[in-house]
Amino acid sequence: MFKDKEFTSALFKLSYPIAIYYLVINLTRFLDLMMVGQLGDLPVAAMGLADQIFFLLELLMFGIANGSAVLMSQFWGVKDVKGIRNVLGLCLGLSLGGSLLIGGAAVLFPRQILSIYSNDAIVQELGSQYLRVVGFSYIAVAFTSSFNAILRSVHHVKLPMTVIACSLALDVLLCYALIFGRFGLPAMGLMGAAFGISIARVVEGVAMVVAAYLTHTPAAASFGELTGASPALVQKFIKVSMPVVVNEIVWSLGFTMYKVAYAHINTDAIAAINIISTIEELTFVPFVGMIFGSAVLIGNNIGAGNINKANTYAKRTIFLCVFGALILGGVILLNVDRILYLYNISPITKEYARNTLLVFASLFWIRVINMAVIVGIIRSGGDTRFSLITELCTMWLVGVPLAFLGVFVFHLPVYWVYCLVLLEEVVKALVGLTRFISKRWIHDLVRQPV
Figure (cartoon, rainbow, N blue to C red):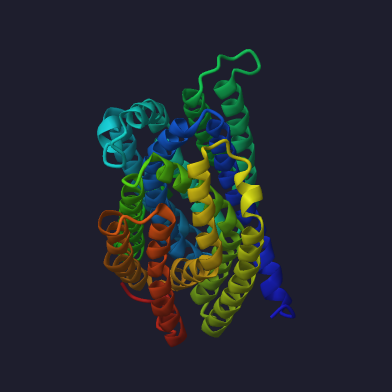
């Protein structure tokens, strides 16, 4: 495996900027939450619940961008720049529509939305104030997501990494200053985080677009190219991308149901889950880079007609992911108390977080397998419909029912409910690996008729 210099070199060049991109994003969230965590349990819970709305938006953007990237990557295999720019136009239009819809709801109906997650009046009020501010920044995310997708697909991965790193440094600086009242600015507490995050997101979206055009990347499309997709391409875009979009929407709704279940245990439980979620996101960073990097390579090779090479690259990706996940999971198990020492939380919240983190670390490798196979490999092969069916069935027939049984019937503590939820991942891994071995996930979208 490691003697194949073509694979290792290409994977490294694509993976490390993508990994740094997601590391910076998740490290910033970690730092933002840690700063808000100094204000107490209620602001942590409020920010976590309000950010669930952004999480829905993020998953929608992720689905649109990654569904589009399936086509973009394969088109780049034959250097079809015009086709890639046509897909970018479709991606951007759909993303803007989604961001306006979710952002509008966040600004106009924040309390009604947050009441779905929690019946704590104080958490609802704090979260509503936060959401009214950050909701205005959602439209900028559509530009960031769409341009990142095309740049990644054509191997221009350093540009988005640089833009994100700069904008999120601004995020941390503004949040620190506005939460605690530094550099002559007022101490605004949770609202300081809202304004800091919002300003940084808008700067990020503008900078991503400007940088893509100034450097003359394949993303520098004219208005005619953005709006010039043929009916055949639109049909192919819908066929390939829509299952990914629906997948992320359905998955996000299911994940929301998990949050609803956790929130009905108590406020300490939801605070613990919010902390664990941030740690999870950081832990997945190196694997996101590897998986998305290999997905680009696999898509490029399928588009170029190198089917055997694409399958070989997929096998190597799975091996690397499992090997790395076992090591990292072990490191977390040995450092649980050191990680949670960073948070100023109540003893009961810390106990919940500690036990939940132990469960996460023990089963982390299974979740990485699913990310590699379902999200990376099978989607990059154009088999997006299978990914949709698998995610939908395992979450809604296994994960969600078990979560609600654990909370409302058996009245289990949050860490045991979290363990039940992860049984979904076990079922998903068995189904996904079976599909991968069959090779029925490989679809040549460049030559395949609509």
